[in-house]
Image 1 (cartoon, rainbow, N blue to C red):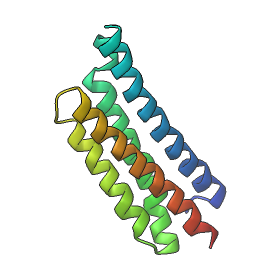
Image 2 (image 1 turned 135 degrees about the vertical axis):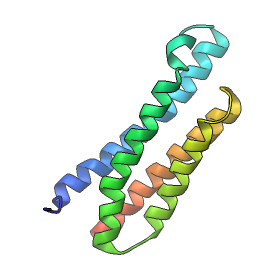
Image 3 (image 1 turned 45 degrees about the horizontal axis):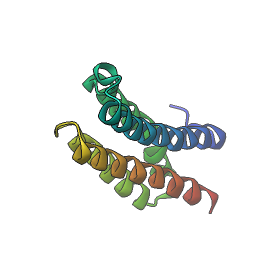
Image 4 (image 1 turned 180 degrees about the vertical axis):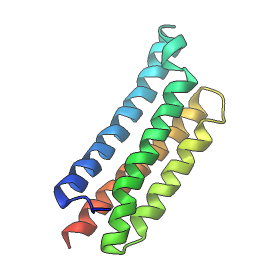
Length: 124
């Protein structure tokens, strides 16, 4: 199996950071739109959106951070990213609301930080 190029890994790490940001925006928008305006609850809070997002985060994280660890040998991006994914997974098990939003946002922040750490580890 051919290893992905540096440019490909860079793009995937950046995509991971962007997806983390989109997830955080989705959380905040969902709380505002559903909580304050009563709009969009049927699709903004659908479990499938959250499950799909976690699955995508796992795929992108494995493709970038996992391969990065194999290349640069630094385990911290993997540990931080894994912790973030675990927080996101736990968020799927709690009812919608402030606890879910906190866990999800904390998780995506950890995942984004892990992608940044992975990018920095490649540049040294």
